[in-house]
Image: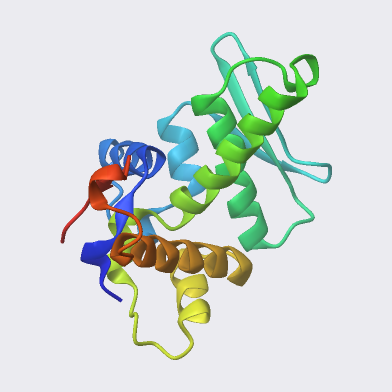
Amino acid sequence: MELRRYYTTALEDWVTKFYTRLNIFYPYQIDPSFIARKMNIFLREKPFPSTHQVVGRFRCIVVDSRLSKEEKRETFFHELCHILRHVGIQSMMPEAFRELQERDANHFTKYAAIPFHMLRFINWDEPYIIEHMSNMFKVTPELCEERLTQVKNRILIKQSKFVPANLSCEKSVTF
């Protein structure tokens, strides 16, 4: 895979900067407990649907303890996005804004779980690449499949003669 042809989104860049500020450079360093501690977020597990809460300076993420380890990790990133990037009470906002926040949180989950600056650690020739990624980043194979498809599609779009490079609102990244 030619990662030099990959282009990042503004959200991917945001995640990379966020991790850089936390000195997170390798997959094994992506630790929800560490991230929560550094961001002054209480992290708890309880046997009910995952949620987050922000009251003044108090910030808390509660992850459903009934989920698998991989699902808990993905849920943490989803709720972390809401705390770091969103404002408002979803039940009181227009449906379109809630959907926008959920879409952003879903993208954030992919980027935080398998960040751009760590794609170089993936063995792209690995015959069982999804399993390899799942073990490396400790997330579900489904999330790895989504991220891998996203990476491949972005490279293909960049290579396409039908999408002039100067029309792209994204910036190219080289290794």
